[in-house]
Amino acid sequence: MSQIDSAITTANPIYKPPPAWRTTLGMLWRDKFAFAAACILLVVIFCAIFGPMLFEDVATRQNLRGRNAPPFDLSRGWLFILGGDQLGRPLLARIIVASQNTMAVAAGAVACSLLIGTGLGLIAGYTTKTASQVIMRLADVIMSFPSLLLAVIVLYVLEPSVGNLVIVLAITRIPIYLRTSRAEVLEVRERMFVQAAQVMGASTKRIVARHILPVVAPTLITIATLDFAFVMLAESSLSFLGIGIQPPEITWGLMVSQGRPYLTSAWWLSFWPGLAIILTTLSLNLLSGWMRTALDPSQRWRLEVNKEKAKND
Image 1: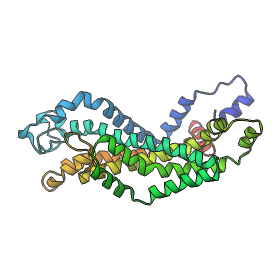
Image 2: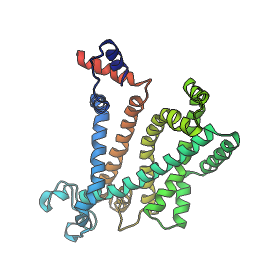
Image 3: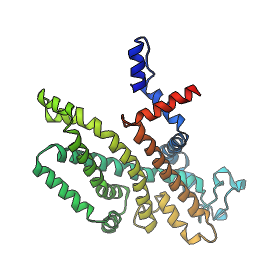
Image 4: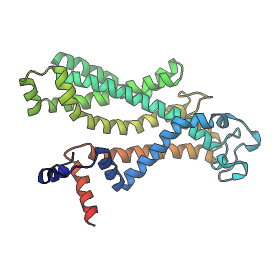
């Protein structure tokens, strides 16, 4: 319940505040940039889930008569609105199908690094000094290697695949969540409600799960949204270098790499998948900015004040 709804409920006990989901959607609708970003991400997620089932056959069917077909030429069908690639396959269908691998790698890496990093950060921030020092030195070791360089070395030794790519990118991102969650826990553990729970005899697991984690979670979710964009760009970079996902599998970064020899004669082979990467990462950055305000109780009132101003106008 928001602060404004709480005040209204106190003054008028009959008043029932709107559901939380409706309030959140209302705040999102009033921020047009964040709303547009959410719509774009929903389209990308829909394509990643259902795209391969609908267009996988079309995306892999070769037609040398339509190789490097120019965009906006609908004589070959609406799937060629973005043009064809070097083997005559429609770029639109390939971008839709490639979204699954791109999003799967980014989502898997972010989810693994978020869970492992947050767990280690909670342990390092709320347990003994020895455990904290061991965990933080582990984070320092991981951070001492450049993330892309570590990924290049590991993927050069191992077979490039979706699973290996997720593992490598997850390992390189763990210190981000570890250090952030530990810093948040060190601050939250000194607050009065945590000390009150300790005095009442609550166990360590209960204090961490019920009192500390809910306060730390909004910050970590915001970081994960930003990190999703970074991991997606890292995967695209590795695929562009040729050590990421290998054909016949496709990702947006691999499509950009495959279109590089044709930049002077068929620019659209690299332009459209590159545009998909840019739009997705930009949408994630815009949405993370909105989430930073919406999930922070000390900042959420700004969106609620804008709601009241919109009603008065």
